[in-house]
Structure formats: C-alpha cells, structure tokens
Image (tube, rainbow, N blue to C red; front, side, top):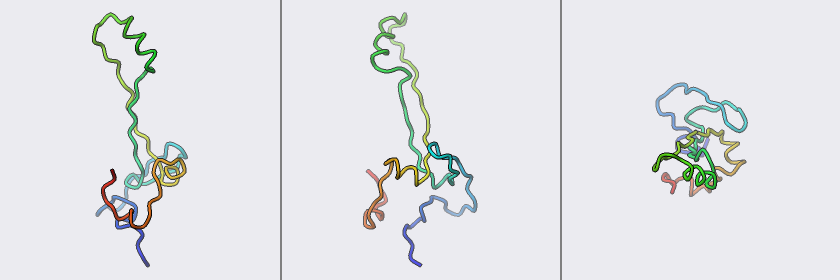
Length: 98
C-alpha cells in the first residue's frame, strides 16, 4: 500500500502512544502530535479604547498586558475553516512552509 505522507501525518517518532487533546472548534479528541496549533496574541482592549486609557493613565509608559492563547484544531476542522489548505502531491513533499 502506498504512503501518502512521509510521517503519516504525525510527528511521533519512536513514541508508542501520544496523549489526546480536544479540538477548540469541534471538541474532537486528537493526538497531540497530529493536532494543528496556532498561537494568538491579542491586546486586551481595542485600539480606540487603548488611546483613551493611555491619555487617562497616571503612568507615562504603561503597557497593557496582552492575551496569549493557543488554538488547537483537528485536521478536519482546520481544513474546513481554512486554517490550513490542501496541498498537491508535489507541494506535500516540501518540508519548510513559508
């Protein structure tokens, strides 16, 4: 039987079982090494409110903290929501994504 991918769609090398984590969109349990992870960094407030806060702030150079969170998706949810795209057979061989 032919192999579609060199790593079988996982980054599990010489590990027997990998813990499963739940997808943020569907709740499906996905192996941790197979899941698609995207980090999101956002400001706590939007830009217009940020300007108002800086004007009314007592401190001159106060930076507001940011929200950092990790989105975990299953393959199906990531393709459906266009987080990743389907690549052709030739493009699948390329290791580095730009």
